[in-house]
Image (cartoon, rainbow, N blue to C red; front, side, top):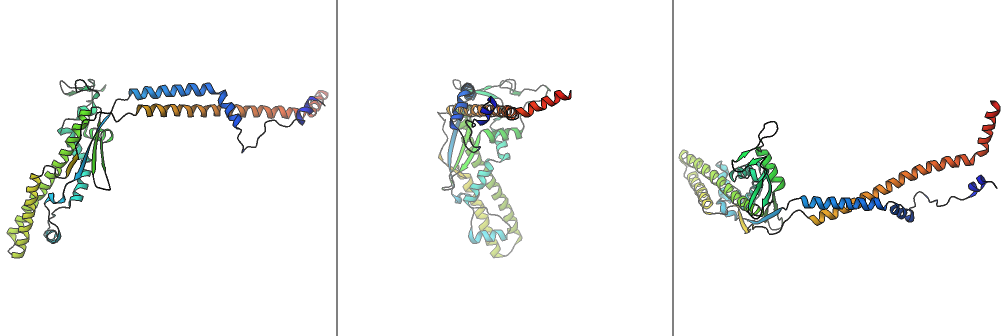
Length: 343
């Protein structure tokens, strides 16, 4: 028996159907590429640790708020409210809807722009590098902002680096402010994140105070406008019944103004005030390092299997060529002899 015949008669060793997985072969592939797995895992772990250490500490202050009593608005309902609608006067909403409006106003662009400008938060938001814990002050990037002269720097084209209102509100919404509501009890939580624990607490207090002041001023303005309108209508009518209605509506609006001026926490009552946080909220450095290590391990295993797949594909192509030559040796010799005779 020739060598070619012995090769042809030998059954194919290690042959498995396409839908079967040889675990031994998988482990062998992993073992062959163990150094790739180890090195990439170490590399990703080191990168994750470096990134986690590079990220600054972020502190979060929270204030738990309860909706104020709806009677604080001083508005009447029922039959008087219907009469007010007929007279063309809006005597307001109940406390719950007033709270919903206040929560949306708190996150509105107009309110936040006024809030940032009033408390001069543009520089702390856009030009700080860190928070000096020992001296309790901001560390500014002086290429962007000079705290002594209170002037903004310029870029290479000579354009001022002072942020626009759009930039300030976007930064504050995305990186600092969070407002959530408990649907079960209606409690509202206002949270502010910052590199400075003191600033996080202070900004939260300012937000709660300013939204109460804003809603109070808005209701007072609306009530005074309604009083002026009702007094003008009162002078125009001689009907005793309508005059009585106007007097009651004017009394209601006057009571609104009085209660609004007397009530300090007009829309939200503070249940749990913000305090200076003692522990950082972000970053989760251990979690970042673990995720980076797992990502490196999974990616390295994937690379090892892809390399093995490519190598096996090339090996199968070479094997098919060799088998083709082995199965037709006589035909190859006959073809060679015919070619020689022809020559």
